[in-house]
Length: 248
Image (cartoon, one colour):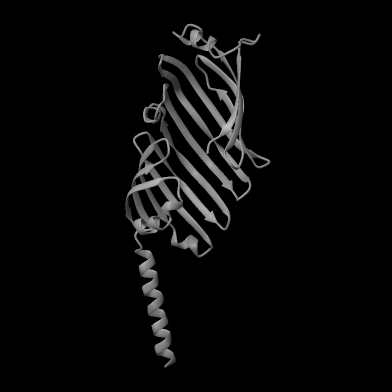
């Protein structure tokens, strides 16, 4: 009798594991979609290895997200998800780790086509150009604070295409964690426009920034005219821009 009971329990565990392993990703999403701020369309595959054709965000739609969930990590109490976004304007891949009340985004690399993205934004009067190279070593959050952060964004061949066609040059933002805040140090990497400053993000997507803009090359068509329209020019030839807000 004991052997029959053990065999029955074993079979039930195998059947349960098989059902979970084959559980459609679309079914799982439907259980939570009313509580999300985004809409997933064209979901296929399972919770372990799946695909989303379209990600509808409030301001933009992104395409083609693939993921793989590691069963081995679950044995250690973590959900480790390798993901890849192959949108026409964004090519990114990385790993998302969920452990207790901590979320970690690690080893995230790729490129963002600035023009392709700004063309999709509703009511955008500006068309920007260039490629942003993304390199995120780690961003780790708990329910209250930013625990760790390290990485950089490199905006190459930056420029404005509309309403004017103006070449800026290149910009860089290195970021790190300081006392629970995400600090981005801004600088230029050469070109017509100079940049220095700092941008600060808190845990709840509130931000503030201070930037100083200047001109290295006044011969670039339209640059000086546009620069003078930004605001008061200081004695050192730069314009200081400050702002704050919330991304959510």
